[in-house]
View 1 (cartoon, rainbow, N blue to C red):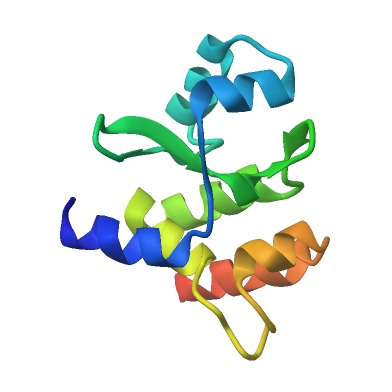
View 2: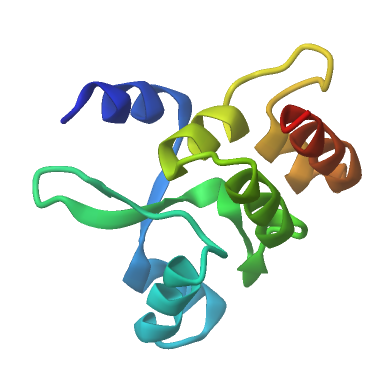
Length: 121
């Protein structure tokens, strides 16, 4: 595991494999791969077998967390790599409070997106 993987692993509490996400979303695994390819989800290679995995916090029951796709677009447009996006999303911010991904899950996406847009300034 590379150094960034160790750091991200320490920040992200749980991961899901693509087939598990497909089952949760009731879609084919190829659709989940397409979501990753289109930048609507972030997947990283993890574990002994280096399988693609997505943070579990990105899934809300049977759908993607509201506002996630737009937020990832903003961060990507700001020049963030997938690893940098994960680090930002899962790092606690006392002024938020909590992590940006927690705020998204609690329907506080407007504030999270505003902060992400301010990163580019």
